[in-house]
Length: 294
Image (cartoon, rainbow, N blue to C red):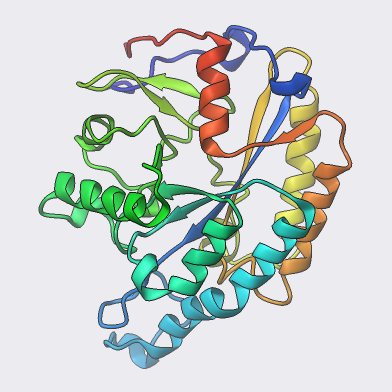
């Protein structure tokens, strides 16, 4: 079975798109802000229990995540805020109640709120996926006054029905399908949906929590990636998405590398920072028509 949602096309065969503001390197800063419930098993772990025994509450792993909400988030907000950078937050809607000060800070900073479930739990474990998606979106709209246009599933996990439900719920773009360096059209039962570029290779969760690399690894991958994309910018723009988590990039020994990455990008004259909705609007206006999956 081939990709049922996105028609296959090699990147060098895609229609040339006019860069936004004449700048072909499009940077999307995505901060994943999550609610790990104290009375549930943790979605991910930094430390295993003695003899592998699992327990709830899981104090060390819960604290790992909550440190990010207490200490990591102020560092990220300060870096982006002092530089005037637009950002998106893929946010569990439960954060609004669990961490209201953080939610208010992101709203005040002008970040775009992207749906990310209600809590940090796979969509594949939900009994009523459609209700969960709509309840999460409604909660974010009630808090921000703006209906979310984007979605990133917890862990990027979907069911066979997720894109259809998202489109019927008013979502314009989804970040789960990491297949291209430009947006691409997806087919759903309810009309076309945009697959927004995201990044698993330069993502602090993959680098630090999954692959467990040294602190400098994210910056090495960043410099290598930008060097490779530079060679392609003359033919078509590229979206560079940077996926971040406050309990990972926001710790003291890593936060300096986030500053280095954004400052390196700010020194370039071919780079523009955009939110997910801004990228979606640019892509729609650029005129690449929706295509049906093969």
